[in-house]
Image 1 (tube, helix red, strand yellow):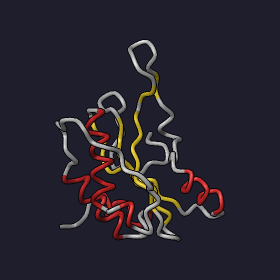
Image 2 (tube, one colour; image 1 turned 180 degrees about the vertical axis):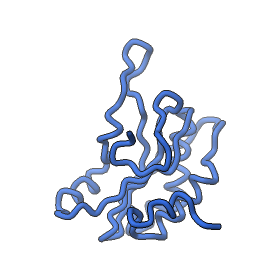
Image 3 (cartoon, rainbow, N blue to C red; image 1 turned 60 degrees about the horizontal axis):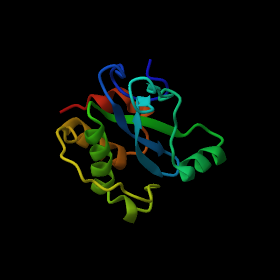
Length: 152
């Protein structure tokens, strides 16, 4: 239902614009933060569903790393879904700033988008908590339920 994306609920392309994700190689520790829209094209008649279930990343560095890694060592984790395009862009940018992406050796992101719009939906607390856990931990698949439902 969610393709290879780790997320505790069904992803809803009918209710949301897209999602913010982290792809992490748990062997090397490298990670990439990105966003993916559920739909592509502009305008009612040109818009169609994106290949988000099969999408990996737009990062050339991450795709090269994946091609050189024989063992599937990547976790594709959805931090949160967002309803507004501006909120989706802001949540990605907030995440990159939060981890200090350009100055962090393990983060493969090399640029941060400029924000110049009014935000109506800031990154949720759940998004913030998950990002902190993704950056702090190396492996998720083994602790999938605990990752998405941490014990208080």
